[in-house]
Amino acid sequence: MKTQRILTLSLRIILVFLVLLAGAVVLFNRALNNPKMIDIPTQVAGLVLTRSFSGQEAAVQVNTINGEDFTLTRAQVGYYGEDESVVIRVGGTPFAGATGEMLAIITTDLNSASGDLQLTGEQRDRGRSVYLLEDQSGQAHLYFQSERYLVWFSGPPELAEAALSDLLNFYP
Image 1 (cartoon, helix red, strand yellow):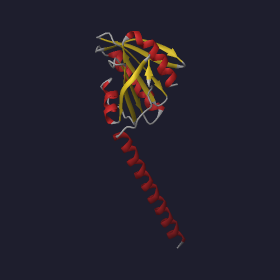
Image 2 (image 1 turned 180 degrees about the vertical axis):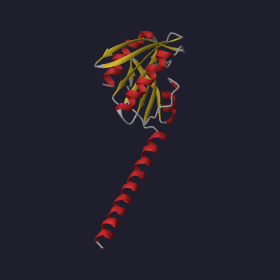
Image 3 (image 1 turned 90 degrees about the vertical axis):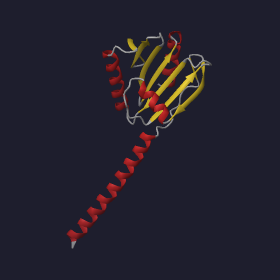
């Protein structure tokens, strides 16, 4: 009799655990299929935000930076200036470690590629690495990790330093 009670209780506990696990899987899947918005600055390098978008469209833009298909739970893209010459792309992962892995993959790919983007340098700022790039059209790019976020700037080279300062202040 006592063994049967223990068995029944054990089965109930297992059932509750499976229901909770299924719920967690559903919620995580929703987050992956519809990445949530990330706050972005209203001004970068003296240029005002003219438009932005989040969700799946933003996740696709973040992923096309390097042609990878990263698992993003948050994504936001912002265009700055009347001519939208500055673009900020921010992708978020569930954990800072996953973002670090994403950063490492992008950096490795850029170091070994001979494509449109060329890694031109790396600097340390506030305890983190900031990677500097240039594309074939002369546009400046930079990217860095801020906890669970990967932040990427694209724009005219003369705005890169001011943009970096603004972004590092916004994403400490």
